[in-house]
Image (cartoon, helix red, strand yellow):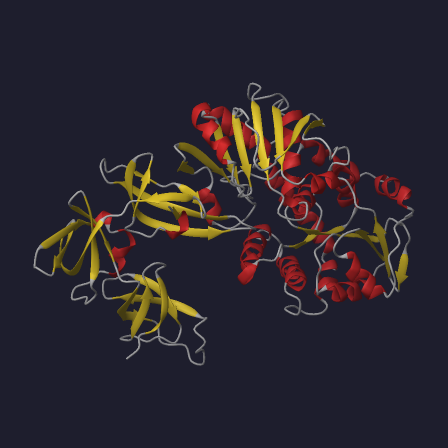
Length: 382
Length: 188
């Protein structure tokens, strides 16, 4: 189901509150959501963010000296403590477990806006049961909104342009055109892989698998937390835009990328190693095979979340692909828990993995996109 | 104030100036800092019910109620009847017992707490740990004594729960009434 091209909802003011915990996941999702509400749904959005410096990596146009500014149609405000008095918007979204300032809640008790709590993405079964439930707090009603992978959740955050990008990237010559400025004349038959991950003890295993691969592999590494591990394995420093070869594997570091560039990178690759929530969803909606490095949590609760996702993702996959994909995810997230050839075995399933990635993308499209689903919910509620 | 995740079945909170008893509370965590609780609440005045979701660290106002120690006596549908030390009967509606009803059985020795609101018994709180006998379960699996492999067991009252694979019919087990989880073999 394609998202509506015209606003389904009269223009409203939206306040979106985001606390940056670490990395770029929380602010990455909020920034995309804010822009989508503005551009796709013609809403007026103010994004409150506590850490402008982290945000700046995703939005280089941001001026760190300003407490309020406009970027790409979104009003960005520095969420300072205490927050100066602000009149609540028509719709207020608190993202990812952040708590609204006390004075803002007091103001909401008079203004009584529509209040949403946007939660993290998960495929765990209980999420469907929690989605759209209400919370009676502070004399107000707050609705919990859970992104997810089924029709009974809020769906995933994607926009029509991303699907168009997936189609464009399948056209002959598109990849070469994208890669040429990076100094990478990649042959059509060569396997191209992007690598974005937290520090990972399974990295040597992956690189050894790729080095001895049946086909030539080019590994593109956007500068980040995994870079040091790659350098350690190579025995030399990565230099941006300079390729280093080890047997059948070529490694090249790329500079940190803004979201649109990173989308094009994901679209151009045969396989994406992704992390967190943002790149994980982007690769899925680009219909590209991926291995997810899930954010590690205490007591290994992230592995429950990973299994729940794999169960959903692989429910309709052919058995050899399902097995290889599970092994690759296990190897990447639980080093030592899978055969040392897990990555090679999975790469041998690549044609089936590509077909399955397209099927999965179609399924997810039918759930609608998160921004449209939120707007629809607001339309139905008002 | 207490956090949402500290509320247990039988406890009462003030929401919008009204008293709500917790019939059930479940806790889930997904992703960083995103623990949430779903509760089943019943309004002590109107009898209305709702199933709200809270962030686990949301602050909610508890209502402290009168309590009295009681022991289970008998079931007169839909009332569960308990007895206090002075042999006064305390009646609690079945639906107000929440998950506690899973562990109530004839002859149970546990000293419970009846909870009163405006003079009326509105719930029963069981001890945190109770001992029950397994009425039926599949034969014990050989070899696994770690307690990590689980199987279903049925109690005298028909309630089923997950127990360690080494537990046999007739064995006494400890159950955590806050979570409904099997804790281990009862100490002799």
